[in-house]
Image (cartoon, rainbow, N blue to C red; front, side, top):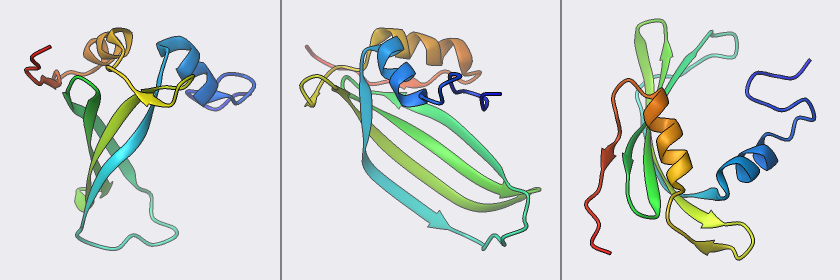
Length: 113
């Protein structure tokens, strides 16, 4: 049986690129360490996309043990065309899918074309 979010072949990344027509690189990461987790801890990981720019988007990640916030991670991803490895505008199809999913809609940067 396939894991949640993967295709039966386990090729999640290939499916993402095929579906959205692009991929992403982590451009920047900030980690605010607040408390340790132990090997047998049950953790919740809350992730949400907070902002879309023209060629990038930002995520906010909270790692929690129960009600205790252990880490806050802020990530910025840059969208790219996998055929050319060049930075490209974030796919409208991806932005639409995220907006359909997120309860709190991501901010949109004002971009002059």
